Structure formats: C-alpha cells, structure tokens
Amino acid sequence: MAAGQWYAILSSKQLKKDRPVGVTRLSMKLVLWREAGGRIGCIADKCCHRGASLACGKTAGGRVVCPFHGFEYASDGRVVCIPANGRNTPVPDNFRVASYEAREAHGFIWIWYGEPVEKLPEIPFFEELESGFDYGEFWENWNVHYSRAIENQLDVVHLPFVHGTTIGRGNKSLVNGPVVKWSGLRMTYYVKNSLDSGQKPETPEEIADYEKLFSLQLQMPNLWQNRVSDKLRIVAAFAPVDDANTMIYMRFYHKFLTAPVLTQLMGALGNAANSVILHQDRRVVLTQLPKRSTLRGNENLVQGDLPIIEFRSKMQDMPY
Image: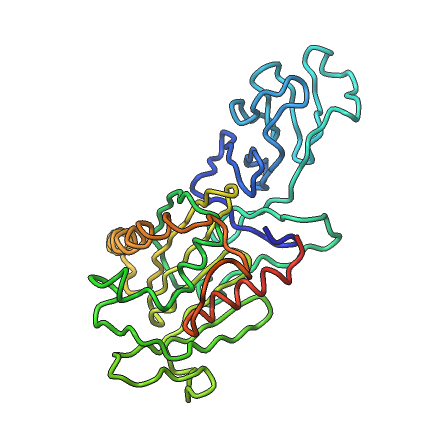
C-alpha cells in the first residue's frame, strides 16, 4: 500500500455510537470507536496486557475498555487505567499499543497510513459530490488484492465481454485511446469505444475534443468515480484488507428527487443495478493471477490498458 495517504476504510454507518468495531485493514487488526464529541479513535486491536481483542470490549467515557481485565485505552494507544492496580495509580509508559490518526468525512471513516506528520493533508474526495447529492450504499468483500479491484474499474477493454447484457451492450469492442490526464493524484480518463468496422483504433494523441467524451476518475489511493451525468455518479472505495482481500464500498449518487421516501427508493434501485454489474466483474476478477498486480508482471498489455498502466506507474512512484 502507498504510504503517506488517507485511506477510506469503513462506511460511517458501520461505526455506531456506543460500541467499538474491529476490522482488518491495510493488513492491520484495528479497533475503532467514537469518542466524546464525535472524534474517531483507532488503535491496534490487541491488548498489551494479555493479547485480547479490544473490539470485543466496550466504550466508556470516550475510551475503549478491554473485555478481559478492564484496561482502558485512550485514542493515542495509551492505557490510562488498570483497574486491578486502582483507578488512581499511575500507569507505566510501556502499557500502550500503536495508534492511528482517524477521521470521519464524506460518509467514510478514514485513517492516515504512513509516518505521522505535523500537518496532515486534506482528505481527498470528489468536490462536486459534497452538496446536492443523495446516495445509496452497499459493501462486500472480494478475495483479491485492492490493486486488482481498482484496475477492474480502470479497464475500458472488458465492457462488451463482461457486461454484454448491461453497460457493455452495443458490442463496442474497439478502444480508441483512451486519453489519460493527471491532476496531482487524480486521474481522469476519457473513453471512446466504438464498433469494429475494420478500422485501426485512434491513439490518444489522435482523439480530438477528448474533454467532451464520457469520463471516469481515480483519486489515489483508493477512490473511483464514474461520471455518468451531472445528476448521476457511481463512486467506489476500495479498502485494502490484506494481500488477498478488499472491501468494496459502492455508492449510487443521484440528485433527481428530493422527497425522502423517493430518495431512498432511488438509492435502493441504484444499489440493485450496481450489484448486478459488480458481480459480473467479480466472476472474472476473482480468477486473476497473481492476486496482486505489478508494473512489470507477466502480462501482455494493449493500448486500451493505458489507465491501468498509468495507475501502476503512479503506484510504483509512491512511497511504501
């Protein structure tokens, strides 16, 4: 995983007010909870006393409490109370676990993966979605490295073959370009697939007025957006679990309706459609070997794979 980045790792809906949640993310076992005032605590999910899971415990006074012997942990990973020693007895400094900076934004829980810095950067998101949109959401685990899950969404070649009954209808198998542009850590790629009538595909440089084409975006390290229209977007967060698993959070953003009941119905319908398409992908992606992709793997790539090549190059250039 690329270091020095904010990763979306949970939906806000998964972190309740009154109990801790244990997850594996970025190959680390973590426990998260809501502190007083809404801040998010995130520390290693292993008590430094006897190794019990803190996620099996409870929260009290903004702290997470070990279920085994009642040790209380603050969000910086320090034990602040050992009941067996008496509540007013100072706790030695070695009673602590690793802690992680965690924040809530845009309906996700994020953690900072990398060395602590004095001033953390802003959490990246797609600015146009911050107001006016409602969304429906679901999530599921895929048995692949998160690089494979992301690359599936960057793949403009597979549409007529994997999604022939849904978004790939029309058999537009010839891939012109695609055109890829970067702005910082955000990739925008423009798609111009067409019917194969014996012509050669256009190179990215030959495509005129590419800005008018259908486009999608990848926000490094783990967000993706399908810009379907001004009023409809599909967003996914690919939360790395470990080297062989990814939790995918899929959202259907829309601003067609304002009535709450109709908004919920639209979100549910969008989720159902997204699920069908996602499962068409999953059937194939889960068969890919190796589970993790690399820039110079044993693959023969084609021009249409340019967004994937660009993603791999960017990942290689980022610190680990």
